[in-house]
Amino acid sequence: MDFANLPESITICEVGLRDGLQNEKTLLTTEEKICLVNDMSEAGFKVIEVGSFVSPKAVEQMANTDEVFKGIKKVDGVEYRALIANTKGVDRAINCGCTKVKLNVSASVSHNLANLNRTPAQTVAGFGEAVAKAREANIDISGSISMSFGSPWDKEIPIKNVRDIVEAYLAVGVKEISLSDASGMAYPKQVHAICTEMLGAYPEVNWWLHFHNTRGMGMANIMAGMLSGFTKFDTSFAGAGGCPFVPGAAGNVATEDVVHMCDESGIATGIDLDKTIAISKKIVAILGHSTDSYILRAGKSKDLIRELPTGQIKNQTQVKR
Ligand code: ZN
Image (cartoon, rainbow, N blue to C red; front, side, top):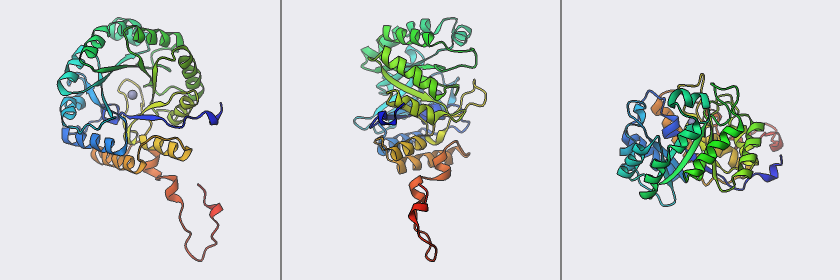
């Protein structure tokens, strides 16, 4: 592993409005969400997950996603995407002007069989109709694979299972694929091995990574992903989020923590860190509780550097960065 292999730049998708909020009790108004999306565009995010088109009965927080899409100021070059579950989601995307949707399947065979009575690859094969409908409407479509690195219901997720799902996505024409660690079980060495294998086997895929920071390994996993050649990562404002199916689940790695790490490491994100911090502070104020964000708690490293009060010995080398 050579840190000289770190990418010069990465792309971050802010998924807080979807993944970060879907389990929050405080329901955000359409206006609040529109403001946050516009703030994100302004902060330099090139990809923003605005919400999901799923049943409002299942996820009440996402009920206003259509209205949010209608109200946001769309900036050229910024991709505004939504999570969908089926063709109904494509219909909703068409009706509100959303031009990028994302499907998801769990890599856990037992989870899939229990819920859908199908294997994950069979589930993906069933996405063909949704993909065709999206294509017809000029809507770009991507796919994610949750539990790619481990699941609470399986002893292990064999990499062959993940490859089968990737191939099923490719077979229905989905070439942008996200490997997701919803259960927070991924660890850096595994991430590096899986990402390296996937990149080698499917160079045509536009890869994303999506880590939850449940066991504090999210940042290290992102670094491992970068070292294996992945350059696209989902993160969530203030580290907000969780998952009702996973005990003790935490949110995605906090966006400001990742942007800060990249700024310090000389990896370009195109995102303004101060504006990102302001967005995260705003969301924490709306939610009314603290979240898992190092930078919101401790501030930027650069903010620590200051002149010592006069009268004390000045020795800049002692000021740790
Ligand atoms: Zn997630």
